[in-house]
Length: 203
Image (tube, rainbow, N blue to C red):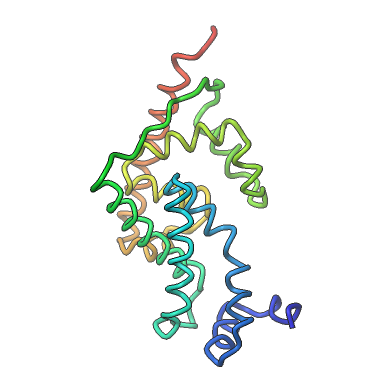
């Protein structure tokens, strides 16, 4: 049964789940849990919030399957749920306390393009390995300190490889806004990155 489920499309799995086959839902969870968890980890940067939103996302998928259009890809819809719940969690957090800003560690002298290539070139890199990469950790600190709308667009574009159209659907904004916001986000990131490495050079 497990082998046959792995060969099915998302729509076929969802159809089986709707028909009462719970194993199909578990296969959907297994298929997306790693990428979704990594997205939430980078977006929220707080373990307690990550765990809560992760569970809430799949719970909503479990309970609101009737609203899903099986003719459309499941992944953007799932990330839409996660992004909305993550933003809600951050708003609740910000009502009670400010999000802490990580202290910038010593940084190697990499250009913005070098850094992006190092982070995003290998799509199969396990997230645990990415976490251990010092450059990736410095990148995460900068992203954490960015405004929510810029942070989410960077995470969706560079870490999850969504297209402009998919990001527009996930964030419920026009494609033109996606492009301009991503341009702004990349520009701000480059500025923050250069500022971080500028005072650390040995030459």
